Amino acid sequence: MQLATTRRGALITIEGIDGAGKSTQVEPLAAHLRARGHDVLTTREPGATPLGRELRRVLLESDVALEPRTELFLFLADRVEHVRRVIAPALAAGRIVLCDRFADSTIAYQGYGRAADVATIRRWDEESRDGITPDLTLLLDCPLAIATLRRRHASDRYQSLDDGFHERVRGGFLALASAEPTRIRRIDASAPMETVRAEIAAVVDRWLAEHAR
Image (cartoon, rainbow, N blue to C red; front, top):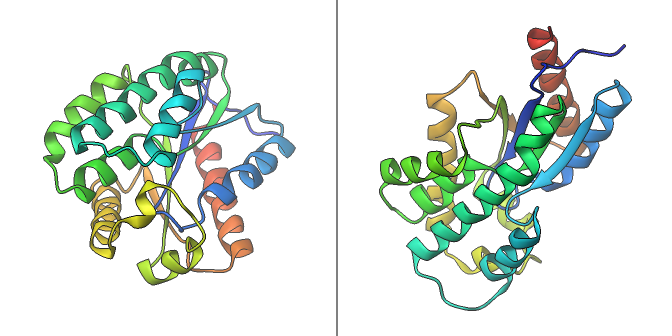
């Protein structure tokens, strides 16, 4: 049975600390929604545009040292390009956009993780989004010990940071979820992958049914 989407489309973001398993859940969710008749676009941050792919290389794969503010501004530059070239046109066409990381990651990582001024980062982030905000956010949350085991073979810039950084990031995500429980739905990512996948699909199906028009 096909569910109607909103006329503007819907932006659904998937968030969580490194190792929570969010990236592995994007395509299964997209397939689930397509099977129900929805027009779905999957995307990610950083790296969804030509400039974004270059920024992703610098931000995640390069060993070039970055000042925290430089890191922040590069993520925001990626978001400007992403919103204007990918997300906004898809929403205007009525599509469901599934995005692997978005603004909440900036607040959690560059704000809470770097122990920076979160209020200031929020203001800069708002400027980068042209008024676009997620309609629904799935926060895949699990204890750091589990996430660390899952990401032991990863090699991006953040894997070398200490547990304190990752605990602050997780705390940031949980604080955001507590402040916006209607938008941000916490998913227990410590459960088996299939269980997590089923819960994600159920949450999204309920949200779409509630917001169909």
